[in-house]
Length: 405
Image (cartoon, rainbow, N blue to C red):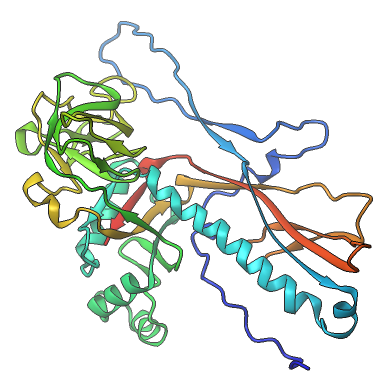
């Protein structure tokens, strides 16, 4: 005999998923207008203002981001009919809710892995952020990228980040009621232009092995890849999700504001979109999340890098990169709601061959899950599975900023 009362289900906060764009759920699985598993989300064009009365026609260039529902996750278990009769009271509380909590956690975890698509980065690898200036800088990076100040900016950090910054900033520039809430709950709330949340699922980036004295190999390179040399030979020098900068001072490649095309005064961060292994001579081609575009409607940088421009990984000079090589670095995210999106679709309920089929909803995320219970006559068991179909996409990576620790 077991107790009649089940203990609380272990849950992470799942706050990231609740703060992103969810408008595309209704695009999938519409009777008579089914689009398959991929929705291409159109992004608005960007234009350049021209001087004088003479007409200067520009091309209308629209881009799109694919949102693919390719993740079908499930939890499955089985029990006998005798179990169902004698042992499993409160079926939903004892079995369904823990299973649903596990699926919801997986969705949130997958969402926070979108940090690997984000280039903008503040913070120091290996150091827990503990200063207001760092978070203010993250907010400034969003502003320099044209991110709206519309109350939809959030910050998601892990428990250690949160504890450190609450302790460092307690009592500063807050109303008495806000200070009281910080003290009683150990949470920041709204501060420094961001709505603060704690989520135990934030990503952890394992830094590449690095090595050598990497530089740009060839002038006037543009686009989404960069030819380099000077790395340690035959080594996986960079991991997907690592961030590099190019040059410094007058030789640096700086970010620009998307409307004015003026330099922000901050080196452009480039996220590495796939693992990079050097060849036997230390050469490597790096795939970049932000293309090197020094002009035109979609300008991203002030200039293309000159040959032999130094490459800095996480703003760390080659001579010091051994101090961060291979480290595990937690990644908080400051972001606008429209930087990321999650879409789900309701899987069809079978009409035969099962004991029961119904839908259950996760109370935290508001996501509908399919529950199917069957019967195996050979074993007198009742297998049950819970499924969800979903997809994540990074819509506007420039409207997010990583906070490294």
